Length: 319
Image 1 (tube, rainbow, N blue to C red):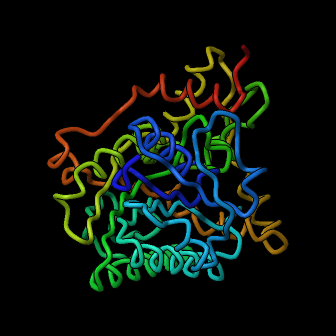
Image 2 (image 1 turned 60 degrees about the horizontal axis):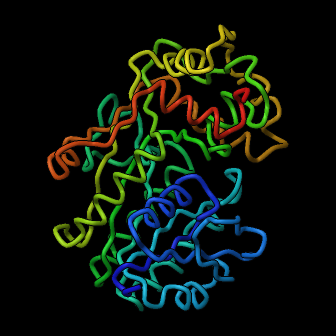
Image 3 (image 1 turned 30 degrees about the horizontal axis):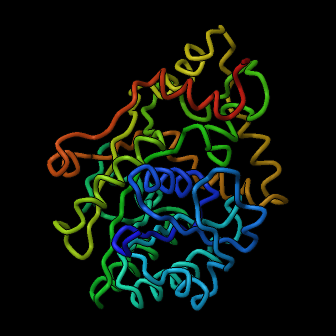
């Protein structure tokens, strides 16, 4: 296997990292995955070369990145916890590894960077004035990646809305709207039903990432794109699609925001979730015209097909 077709994925057990890793393997790449407990993380037939290491340890990340031409930085603090203490230090490890190996850093971005002044349509160069702590950290991460690119590193950022897909248990779709591993009896919608919302089907997102990686020679040192994904003018259309995909007229219920607020003083994850309420109350759509101009199209799986695959992967449909 040539070095030019070797990638290191940080966060291969997560949604975006795992999906991008599978897309790399499907295209003939050798994919190395870093984990503190690779024996536990490895799954039969996953096709990954597991390496033991911690994303907080720059030396271990650098060692794992030897010979890699791409480093996918898709590792996040679990359950929204301790972003301030973990997110930037883990990114520094990736930057150090990229500087040592010459690899392209691939960074899955979010809409957290943007505050309400960018609504309802945000281009890649829209002002980034987030109203949340996590948004501020995301802005700081992208700023650090820009600085790294100015010092010789190469960076690709693809921003997207909320993830859904067959392996997204740790997402609004998997953790709030449905219950993984349980037969669908109801679907919960977190937002205002008449307010638009953006979703990213992870297999489509990973395919788009791969097409950008394959065009990396044409990209500037710091390249940022927006993934349009599945946009619903009425946000509740996503819940309706879940009902259609399941084939059952299950009820659509509201998210228990009041309970989350009452428990937030005691649960850090709930405090972080509350910061994101503005994204469920106002429409924010990502402008993907720059992406389409380069690729000619954005990969897009039909909604019901994508939702059905997600429900099946999460174990919410009867066999």
